[in-house]
Image 1 (spheres, rainbow, N blue to C red):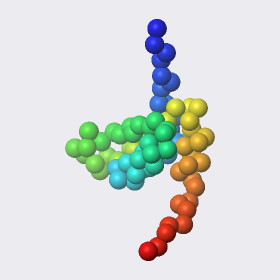
Image 2 (cartoon, rainbow, N blue to C red):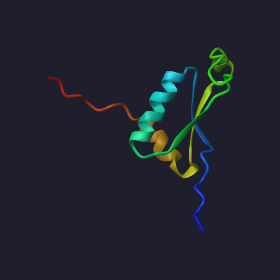
Image 3 (cartoon, one colour):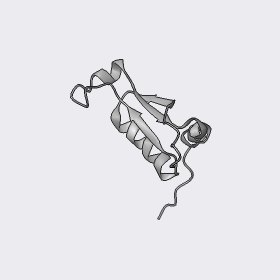
Length: 81
């Protein structure tokens, strides 16, 4: 019997636009944390609804602490040529 995966049900951030939400999701994905976006904007046909119903970034409850810490950590120094 296959073990059920825990649900992505803990909201860790909200965003007023899709670009910021996707960037945050990409940071989590690059660090091995599964995440999802919940939007109420008629599947992108009414993006103005994002102001009324922000996009929610969700993770598993057990990953929420690591995810928040990762998103709150400022980027490190970059190497200049």
